[in-house]
Image (cartoon, rainbow, N blue to C red):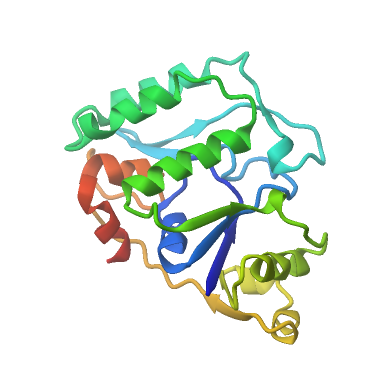
Length: 225
């Protein structure tokens, strides 16, 4: 059984969901230290000026874990994000099919960043017909504090014999320790596809919502392709 493990990100890119496609079980690594200026509270969308960030403002104090980080709701970020989607995707082929979901998300009150991210990912994976995949929270498991042993513990707890890592993962993992504990390591093989977009030349590594608005029901096949 293949286990994939990743921090809950905000509106992740296509490669994040490719991990879900490949794995049998996906675990949200929500109990590790939050990292500023990465992908946990922001992602990119396409605009007429190439691309822009959608950033969720947070109230972060080092060394808080991801599931401890609160959203700064004194900033009207929800209105800004929804307006950005309407402005930049209202002419996309499948805008009307998906905008209602985002209107619902941005109408709700969110206190913790991790809760928002997991909710979004769970809903988005259903749009990709990945709802049969099992998902779990790392914070619900008893795990080692050591980075490598933590990953192995998650695999063992979820009944896995193979850990699916990103291409860069092998640089910081102790591969011998995986072998000693009977866990194989599989490196993700994902090549970013091109697909129809608005606003000129193709821009890769955007949020999954760019693919959904532009390709709709074909999005899953585009990722696999």
